[in-house]
Length: 340
Image 1: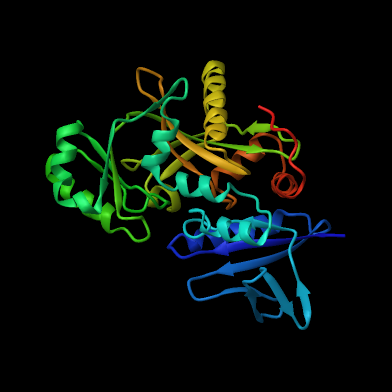
Image 2 (image 1 turned 120 degrees about the horizontal axis):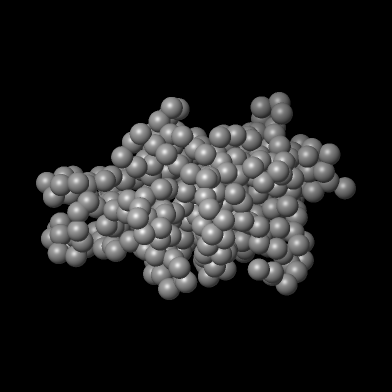
């Protein structure tokens, strides 16, 4: 009997477009002989499934079921490919926990925590060999004093970004004090980003992104790293989604020692934050010091053909469909004792 998979996509933010592309890729790669896949779109207005004939069937939110011409469809597992709210901030996971439907991502608490960059840094800051940039966390209530607070505590250049949100929306690099206010306003006013702003001292170095997941056996598997080289000031929204602005090298050219150190730190981050499923950690190796600097963690990473995780899965010698199947089986199978 096939496993019924609710492939949840869409969302409340501008990242919905990427979510649809990611979900389409996952659906294409999953084994149709093993899984019955039902794409489910979540928007602010409605939750629905579109049948092969183009009919929109609303989700019954009491139990997340579908009534397709009198046939009630319930699901064995939810595969969450919804970037931004409500799929990446824990709200969807909390709902699924309440109705008892297993899912492929981190739980509600971890998802909510990791959506907040400043809080995440506080939790992981004492991990061995991990460094975090000196920073100031700003709230709407102290917005008027923001410029002074940053200048008193940090040294130029600054990296200004919304404390929540994704796809580098509202982020900017500030080289001169005169540009700080504009950067703060852009970050504070970015949609769906929590009205909190994180300002960090800029770290100069090589930038990497690296995935990790727990397989159906309970083992942690660290994927090969991707190095990101961009012609932009940093890896911003345009660099991520406009062709030709970024070079991505997978697997990255790292020494054996750097690979081992990164792998251990990423595993420690995964365990410390109680992650589940697949996540992606972004980091710098600082120029001259070679220190590992944490940038952020993404608990619902992109899954388009060009996204980092699919690149890294292929570099590992694994098929994307087998990778997604591992996530599904890990979500629905009785959890074995976790292994490091």
